[in-house]
Image 1 (tube, rainbow, N blue to C red):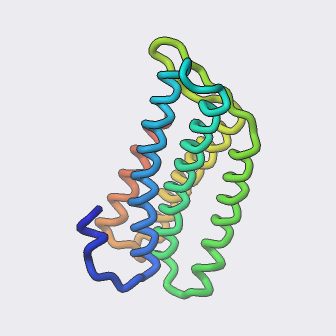
Image 2: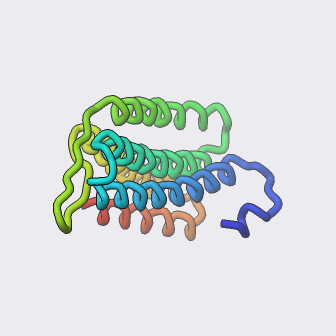
Length: 167
């Protein structure tokens, strides 16, 4: 990440979204580790802190996939007007999903060997991430002539990996 941060940038939309993906991917890992630590040591933390850490992780999952969708849209739609129109719909859905994750209930399950959050909030996060990952694969495949072949392959492999790890 330091190599990318130290490079000269033109501040293209794709560069901004790529940086957002890197930062959000780092943060999703950090929030996952923190959430797992809190759940592992659940006797030391209130139930509300456990739920909040699980919700923050769920929100970060949606941020990563939303940044990825923005990155792909920035790569596919060159025209600013078309880009904002196409990407705007996804951003509105992302805000609705984030709001739903924040207000819906979440419970935590902690037994030896099993630590996780579950409930309506978690279901919204995973349904959102799964549907966006599928849509990203279809969008990249459909507009394959507009996306660099190496980038297309990398994004498809990454989304397939995300889907597989979520199942």
